Picture (cartoon, rainbow, N blue to C red):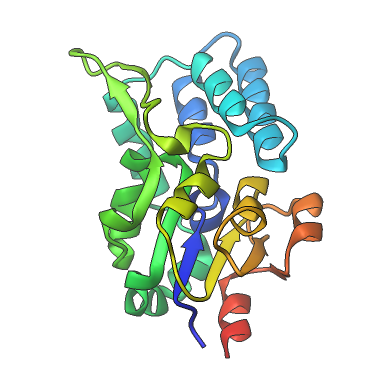
Length: 220
């Protein structure tokens, strides 16, 4: 039976990659120290997702290594539109049918998330994520620190603010997704491994999903 709510992560879950890492690859492709910087950014991403360092520290340090503008966002969005996780694409009918139950809570950025999930019937009002701050020249000068998602344990804080009632499932690949059960409203946590498998996260999960088909099998 479909639960009352399904909280779904975005990066490495709904899409195959970490969107900020993809932004970094695009922006730093011609940088003389691109390999060093990209390695550092990937390490910070993994440290945050594994729960080795606080999420805010991971995000802030990655942003400090980049110099982004609005044009970069549009360019990478066109890439990400082609990077939806295969099993999510395969089950697009289910997602659209149950879109009002599906909530995206992500440490990523709304500018990159909304255009993708809107194609699956998920409304922008059901997307909770970070937001960039731009100056008058359309350069990104930071992220909205007033947005609760930007804080440590921001995802679980946001989930608690929603005051969800009933059965709530959380699906994701990282520690911040597990926290939605540990300290939040989720009754079940599903470790999603189609794109990346983190052994420590799987050990915390109620169920490990190799793809979204596994989740639909669980619901039967």
